[in-house]
Amino acid sequence: MRNNALDAAKLLACFFIIVVHVGNFPEMPQYFGELFRVSSRWALPFFFLASGYLMGSSAHDDLGKKLNKLVSILFWSSILYIPILYRMMQGDAWRTIGKVVSNDTLHGGTFFHLWFLNALILGVILTNYFIKNVSVKLSILVSTAILVACWYGDLVKSLHYEIYIFYALRTMIAFALVYLGHYFAKSGVLKKIPNKISLAIILFGVIFMVGEVYQLGIIYKADMVERQFPLFATPVCIALLSWCVNTNVRENIISNLGREYSLGVYLLHPLILYILTHDVGQYIANNSFCKLIISFISSIVILMFVKAIVPIAYRKLNGIGVM
Image (cartoon, rainbow, N blue to C red):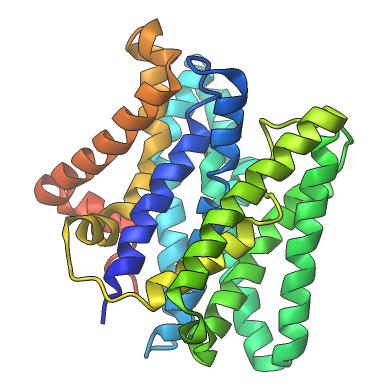
């Protein structure tokens, strides 16, 4: 049975992921743009958590099929961005081929945002291992330690220290959040949390995310632009998932769009942003808010047309039909 609230939340999360990717909002006061991006940093972790929850809620425990689906999505999404790579390499075919077959592509696909899929694949594999071989208490402890370590690494990096392990930890939060999502589904613990508590955690969690980054920026001159994982990002994710689990929402246009197109919006929006930045004039290129609205809406519209006119392309991008 579909969870319409969760489908709608995934579409909302897609919107806030685009907030992070459109730029620094130079058309607005500096701190507003930077902190607006910070307030959106719960969105990508939410997808890891929701993926784990759906994995735990599923009546079918076919790990091979899930992994095959993710690998297929990663492959076809990487193919989609090869023309952009070719253009970025100024038409140099050999450099483009070198990039496509490079170690970077193996780790994160052909474009920056596709690291999410590699991380999710790793998260599913490790979650399966921990479920079958490690106690629940130790698994939760390890997951929590990874999340805290990633926050700390992000914090240190923002203070202008070189800490390359942060990117490994950023990948590992996929496991931590997928595992926790799976645990929440199996244990039913989220059903015990009243919606009022969940909404309060979401509200104050976002405020604390912004407050943490702002205070560090003011007091210690920390980099506010590239903070990726504020401390309260995880509580906000968990509270939002809890609200979705405990809220009965009728099927509606938002939930339908989230169910059909949230993954596609995530995969497609950087392509549209690239075009908006390079091909439609300086006004839009330099206006992050315009790019946000245009890329979000046009991603959905394009996916609707693709689904209706070229359904095989829609199925490839969503891993539909992969066994």
